[in-house]
Image (cartoon, rainbow over all chains, first blue to last red; front, side, top):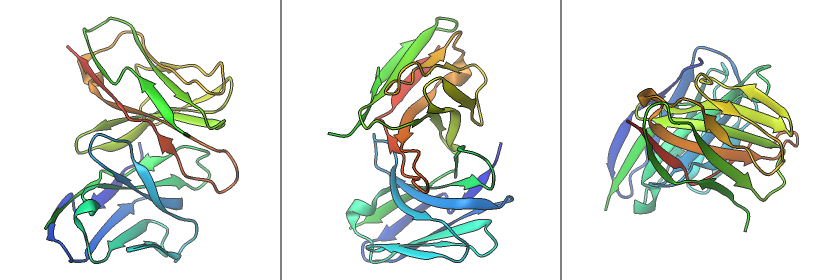
Length: 112
Length: 114
């Protein structure tokens, strides 16, 4: 199956710090999505990206669709304790129909 | 309230005993999907359905069956569960409108097969 490599695997940061994480693939993706999963719950969509080079923000979150279409980045500015959770990238391959592939996740811990 | 429900939330069973995990959504979504989540592997898609009576294999369909007889329901069937199917399972749904990618996930079903 398609592998999305997400890094880092985990992060421990101080409240107020900025966070960066990325996702790479060996294949070209048609869309990139970023999800957050809180403990004991299902993932929730944060940002959707539709074309190469696109930069999209959602509050303190900013994500970019890499120009090679094989990667994506998520930045969180001025982290707060409620940012704690697991962040997943996901996407759809070109011409893959409606199949979604998810990354391995980045676990974020924010220390107050 | 718009939601995806799954039952049961927790299940411990033995190898070979057939089980069904139910999934229901109240948003009239055409698209429904099942994922399993394992440590270090993220979420992997098992099966998905574009509409009633239309289902397709995802990345890891082996050992699973699904059916879509009604728009709101998408049960996951394990005919003969094995320990390697111990996992956290999520059902999700979304609209099939163009460029709508937001999937609504259920709360998860934690399955243990001994």
